[in-house]
Image (cartoon, one colour):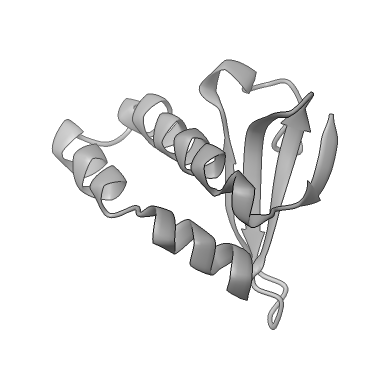
Length: 95
């Protein structure tokens, strides 16, 4: 697995990983209406903005994005770590 800084061309795959993780993993905790609201609030422009303004990292298996994280470069706070549901418990998210 390779970890690298995200680039603009990763945005669509990051969005797909995020939506899958929200639906599959979040669906175990949240109601369907909450999941729908959460996912529908995500836009490609939002991911592009995050890549431009924050430190976004992707985890790759081959050329496929299997996870991502975001960190605020000013505070060092990591506030997002998402992994494709089919890659959970495979050390993608740090565990």
